Length: 171
Image (cartoon, rainbow, N blue to C red; front, side, top):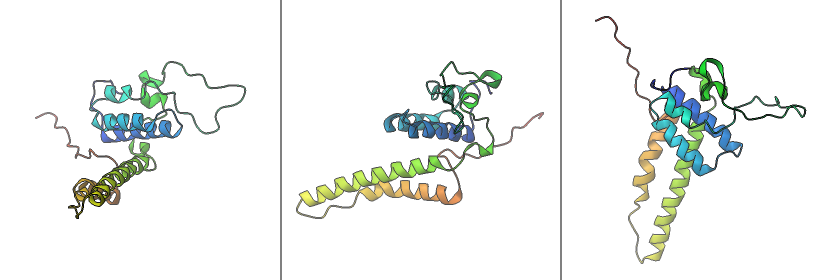
């Protein structure tokens, strides 16, 4: 487990987003809490900032691992090499840590809900006035939709996909 002050990678942010999505679908997080934590996850720079987002959530458990004789009891986070959200929630890094695309589904769901709201506002405003109003929602949902479409088509899975430059040593 990397130390909290070290910088996190895109795969780390995406893995935490995946964990948050599982907890939202399980009912532990409201949509508002999920949106807030998701935004904070993609804005996080260090492992410590990512760890803060999952400390109040129970560890992930494989499907069917609970039995009637041994109910799960939430305790303090523990795990190999210092614990943290990666050990507790079953994520240990690597390219395969981001599985399935629930982060992109969440991004598209956010886009769609915003599109419905702004088009609805535009439509109501247009109908309430006696004339046609310029379709301003296109400037809200158009660029955002194009970026999401490009990310979906190209396979990018997070909003922060900067190229990693190799470190130079010994110069």
